[in-house]
Length: 338
Ligand code: ATP
Ligand code: FE2
Image 1 (tube, protein in one colour):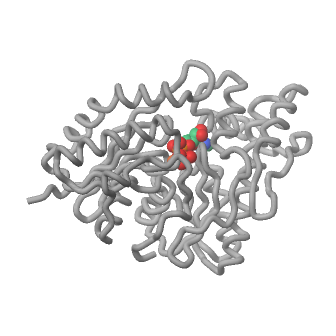
Image 2 (tube, rainbow, N blue to C red):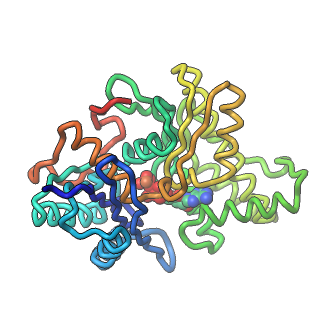
Image 3 (spheres, rainbow, N blue to C red):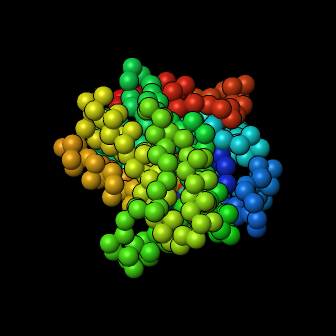
């Protein structure tokens, strides 16, 4: 009898993660490890080495935590793209090796679409506008004619990369986003009547698109001119999140949809969640965010999308299993009901 569990392998960037879904698509918590460089940003080759070294122990831990053995795996899914080439290739190699050894189907999936599907499953959304905010990606997405279409996106860096880079400039190690959130909320507690006067930053909206590098440089300039770090973190969040929420709101208005769904690592942020909820309430719409362990990169979301695609008849042959660093959200046909 084939194993009942689908294994998911995530390795697009800084995190290697193994996850599982059961025969009904219910996810188990992932087993993950994130590379944290001593200084500077993530080096793709070093991250790939980290993934190679961490893989065997992480997989064993996943099996032990769920009381299963390799024979219980009935399918192997992996992130085929987008992401950093060396990192993607480690995950794909592990997936091919396991699928071949266990004689299971292999399914290469789109990482961005996996963020969407785990969110839809966890939040019970039917047809949302997705605000996908992570390190590398910032996109507003809607389902239309069999694809997840990108209605607006960043023209330069992802919002998470912007937060991480700003933090790095202050000596805060990766990932900087959660530390900025903490500094901003501590500062706000001490300054409940805070105003953006004197803390203005450029607005990131460009039509339905966004651009963040100018915002980051301007935030740095506020610090150079003597502003407090906590105050600048608060202003940076207020400005950059408002820009994302504005294009999500416009997408709701244009499409006539009535749900917003947050996804990606920056969706862990409480202030962003709150801003989305307020915007949705004003429009008689609803706002949803999955549990945080499913916002950050995780193997469970890869397993879920792999299972969904397998159930709809798709597998990946070894000849087609090469990674695609530049795979786009709208390149993947959505063959399952939305
Ligand atoms: P993708 O490949 O989808 O772009 P990613 O590699 O950036 O994903 P994720 O785990 O989805 O990985 O997101 C990581 C990002 O999320 C980092 O930039 C991190 O700073 C940011 N982040 C995590 N928690 C928070 C938070 N509470 N507030 C703001 N940003 C956060
Ligand atoms: Fe991600």
